[in-house]
Image: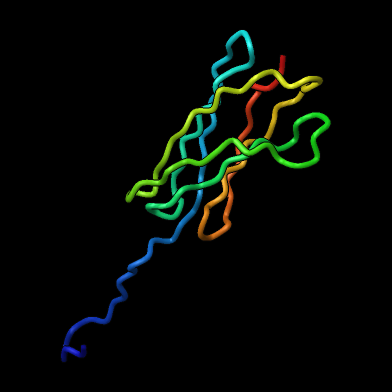
Length: 112
């Protein structure tokens, strides 16, 4: 609609998504809990999360889904067990279900 004398402006209906993940690890006797807090993912969807770089495994380990709320935030906890011969941190990767964009962090929960 054109309104004479009005200033032109653009209203963005879809937010510009910039996926981010904050990964924390709390150790326990069998491995540790991996907590992933995400922000900037597609709203009202579920993001997939994975552990990459596990010793002797060429494909990622699926950790499940993180539900994303209307404000593009989500959180989930995974109870990881020690992974044989895992001496380095595993990369935690969270993938937006709609855009395919990813965010990464790391965790030592799989090291024994």
